[in-house]
Length: 246
Image (cartoon, rainbow, N blue to C red; front, side):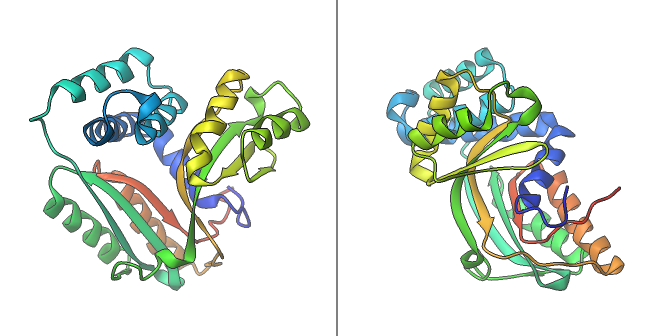
C-alpha cells in the first residue's frame, strides 16, 4: 500500500479479506439473505441483490453457492434475521473510522466494536460524528495484470456505462460511480469480459490523515485488526494514509 494512496482504506480491506476468505463468504451470504427478504430473489428487479451478487462474483464465490443462497433466503421466511448497524469513532491521531456490521446479535457486535476501539486507544462517537467526512460511491477495482485491454478501451467501456471517474496506479484500475450506477457499470464490464476484483458501495474519505508516530500507528493497527477479526464486521473505512510496510 502507498502512504499517499487515495484508496489505502480499500486496499486494507481487500488484503484482510484475502487472508480470511471464509469470513467474506459468510458476510456475503448474510447480505444475500437480507437483500432477498427486502426485495425478492430476482436480481433484475432487486437492485440491492444485484449489487451483492456482483460483489460475490468479484470475491470468486461460486455461482452455485450464490444461487443456493438466494433460493434458501427466498424459501426461509422464518430464518435468522440479520441487522445492519454502523458505528463511528476516532482512532489515535484523529483518524476517522466507520464500521459497518451485519449481525444476528447486535449486543455482541456492539461490544466487539467498542472493545476494538478501547484496545487501540480510540474513541467511539455518535452517529454522524465522522460519516460527514466520507462520500458514498460505487467503487470497482480491476487488477491490471488480469486486464488484457488498454486503459483507453477500459475508459470507454466504463464511462459509456455511467462511471464518474477511473484512476490507475501500478497495480489497480479504480472506477468510481454514483451508487445507483454501480450495477450498470459492473454489467458493462461483465458484457465485455473484463475481470474485476471488487465491486461495492464504499465510503471514500474527502481528506486523509498522516499518522506516523510509532505508538499511534501500533494502536491504529490494533483497532483495524480487532475489527477484521469479528465475523459480524462487514466493512471498515478510515481516512488514514497507511504507510508502506516494506
